[in-house]
Length: 394
Image (cartoon, rainbow, N blue to C red; front, side):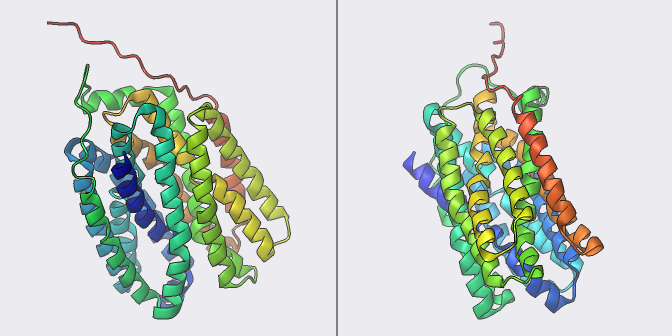
């Protein structure tokens, strides 16, 4: 279990840490290239959509052929995407690199693949806690990498910073080899086909409700993560405030995800999910109504950080608890696809509505309305494991 957690957490730290700082590139790239914010936002929206669409396939391959193979491919693709992002000179090229390549890379290096390994190699009574540890590692990556990325941009320029991060992404390859010898338990009982597993999941109301709730999570966190630096600069705050803001979100993510994983061992996970979505709505409302100062930004970032990816271990743990671990990565990939559709709309609408109205206000209010919706539907999720009929003996 230790090897799984160490290697898995390190991979998530790198993959999630790098992507959390992409908002820092919005202004330097658009100013130098002469692009609108929508051009940049659309590329990152495609990135999130590509991540989601490739997620089920990456999960299916990891379930069948081993997570380490998928992780190696994802690590190499991550490095290629960052390098081509740096040299893209057209909107189409930027969308292809920062969007398609990096989105596919993230599908093979983040939660769905890592959680499949955890689910199959950690005892059920510690599973939610272990997933919380992996999610906390991704949060630590944001806390660690955002200041590093800001320093790289300021010191070496935005293009060289992307080249350096491309080299860093290659570290995923040797870490993936650390999971090479991890084996899934020998199959016992009736084994499902892929088609049967998918039909069973999509026919289950709780699976559909979890999927809808995860859409809201993606919309909220990616809109804030990408557009917060520009939102603060528009209101006269320095770039340093945005850097501290993103770093605080990452730091308090570590606490929030670990606590969510620990509480998920003892309390109904659907209640925790509903509380997280409702609290996000309240925090956003207070942030918008209060005077905007560096300290109000820091307080908002810290509290939002506690609630940021704490939905991740809880949602994935419910999937494993209800449907079992045989196709854990694949089913998590389908749930995560909904998250990424929400991410696509959150980041793209942020740029589109800003260019159209000169303000992010409409998107903030959309984020709050969706938070209330997610809180209500998660209360209806059932966490009981499915009881499958065993085939009759020959």
